[in-house]
Image (cartoon, rainbow over all chains, first blue to last red; front, top):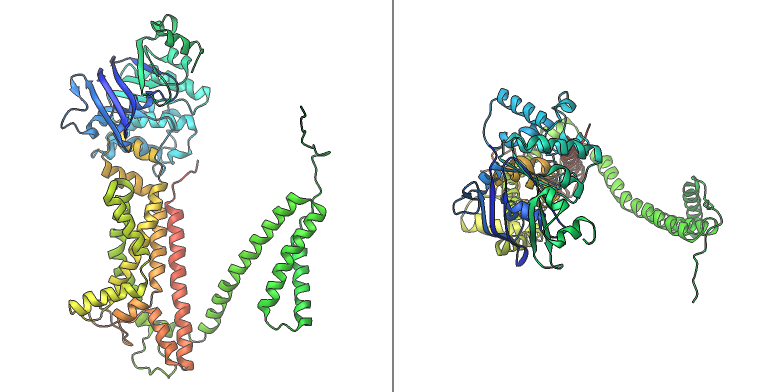
Length: 258
Length: 350
């Protein structure tokens, strides 16, 4: 199910402000790609351009190409709703729907997109919660509100919600930044399992996390505040962390700036 | 080069007045105020109360300065100001409710609620408000049927879709509508519906004017509630590939529905007490008229006005009893709104 993403010459704007400029990269299927870089360098903006969530923000505008296998996400006649069904997203702060139960939260993407039989839904919800390593903790209280869970559980609930619609790519925007080390570990383990089935892109501020979970790492940087962010380099994670080809990457990773 | 050091307190403990101080100060200032009032021959209880209030504020500040020091005294001053202003706001309200219950209960009974004024002359006792309750209910219901959907859809447009000029224009006109005096709304419908189009006076005509008054209130309150829904929820839903309209319908509205209901109920309460447009458009009718689309009707605020204007004891009694019924009606609406808001509020329980 997993698909490859080819980005070429991508530039994104907020109104007249250019947030990222001329980014080209390839995201391999069935692998984890991590985005690292200083705050404000456009990692999250770039991530959001990959499933057309960037244009949801007021003034959000994109130039360039994003090919999912061979289809351009920004081509004429492409429905952003279909793009987002194919490329799921997990956000920085856990955001379960407050009016819905745990079950309804996981089923939301399916139910609000079409009609399913109760038995089908039950099976998918169970599979997704198991996939998010949450099933054992919530199986006895599926009808309780999702907002009653702990932060780490809520984030795994959001992951279950995202994988329930069987996307081909899963984008994660700093999914562990609001979580404690134990929940973080649970989610990192989960990412390791999910990459068997999905293409995963993760934005993180935690370099150890990038080193632990990702196969490839992309380093973003910006020349100065107010300047657009740019992709400095993307390579195998091992190479980025041991022997990067650009000096700035080494400086950032070893903590000499940023 | 000199460094100034901040004086450190010798102990972490400060002198504190006992917990019962405010109560004692309040009782003391009330007693002194009564004494001053009696001696000076002030016969208005309001004057006594104001003297007591001023004394309470001054005394609690003075006591706190003497014992606890400046910062605590300012805290006490603010607290006593809050209490005094709270009482100043509550006293008229309580006295209004008390007065209405006392005077209204003389003729307020089952007969009064279930009979009209059909065969009762204005200066005779008897009769009731059944026709007026019916009229108010129908007019308010019709007004809500017009105003609530339009108001809610306008608010959804403004919050979820509105960008640029059109949204600004709509917002501006909603603001303008908020400021329309009810008599002007009534005159507008009168000239348009009755004088130009030639329709008759009816509950429906009144309902249209009430809807004009209700709409901006619904728009404003719904708008505020929709703005409270975190953007993260919209994004979470959109990122699942759920279309925007379903996101609004299934995620945004359910999250805000408690607050929206409260707003709508308050808007209903606001128009249920309107007299001017009803006077112009519904006219008056002492008989029961169940059809709001034909012929004049009655309504509670209009009934109160009319009974008072009749200028005799039987009329005054009926006016007070009808006022009691109107207050009760609005209170029930408000309680229902709170109930719905609590029932529909997003659950946080574990």
